[in-house]
Amino acid sequence: MHVEPINCFRPAPERAGLFAAPPYDVFDDAQARAYVQAHPTSFMAIARPETAFSPDQDPYAPEVYAHAVSLLNDRVRDATLLREENRCLYAYRLEQDGHAQTGVVAAVAVDDYLDGTVRRHEQVREEKVRDRMAHISAVTAQTGPVLLAYPDEPVIDVLVGLACTGSPLYDFVDDAGVRHTVWRLSREVAAEAICETFKQVPHAYVADGHHRAEAAVRLCLEARERGESGPRDAFLAVLFPASQMHVLAYNRVVADAHGLSEQGLIDALEAAGVSVGDVVAGPVMPSERGTLGMYAFGAWRHLRFRDVEEHGDDPVSTLDVSLLQGRVLGPILGVQDPTNDRRISFVSGASGASELERLAGEEGVAFSLYPTSVDELMRVSDAGQLMPPKSTWFAPKPASGLFLRRV
Image (tube, rainbow, N blue to C red; front, side, top):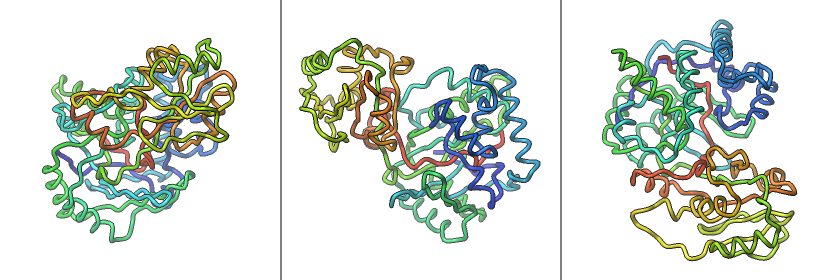
């Protein structure tokens, strides 16, 4: 792998906790508007500039991206954002509920993405890629890091651990209770050692940020067609050892039962190779692969996939998210294209059972899943295959707005 230090704008230490925001894509439109209303000077207002306009405004109109530029300039003028004079690497630790992971903030070569050194596991939506391309072009910066996982490398662990012994640049706790601690690697020899060691890492895997990565890569290719090279030849990333990554389930809610009665739904599930248990008193949160919970018609039930055959050359087909899509969502509930069907919602496992019940209401059907593992993600990526959309939810997530890599 080829990583390098970054040139960036970053928030003043005393303002970092107020300016940093969750990744732009963890919120729907209403949630993003509510967040910006509660945090008007946060980076979310820049990442989601449409929140300053009426809900019927075209979120991809030129004036929307121009507003992001205006807000960014305001934050530079009022010294919320400072220009980092030197190219630096940063060590970035995330801590939540007793879990900790420490990664490296760096620029990763676009060519590593193009040749498969950086591997993907999800399809992208064209609309979202074009949006991030327009945003990067408008603010002339990559503003949200791509979350990458890499096979553990002990030498990198040691080097990063040494960097974390000094005084941190940032240390704050966000609204979700995540502690963010950042150290700047100001010694050139330390940064060089980390970059050199990453050359021994064979692959990294996109854990979160497929659209941000794809947008940066396409802008690089457009620049190369114009005969240009430079900062666009890399993209902003934070790289974590795979063993430190924490994955939560990514659950599903379908808005209705596709015309089926409760007994009709149960019969269809049984016929599709899904065992359906009796109604239980409380929420069902699966504890092992091959099991899931279903909330429908006001009640929770245990489900289990039957007759699942392992195919060594096809790591996708036996994933719980694939079985749910292939046996249930498509043929029974009519969700043939989960990427574009507005009847389906994807809900982080961090949201809890109450959110699934709320979204399902009286007419919908919610499914709680066992989390897809990092090992499963890597097997799919190594096979050159793709998972169904929204198969993994990594938590905690790096904040946006801490590093604005200038391009």
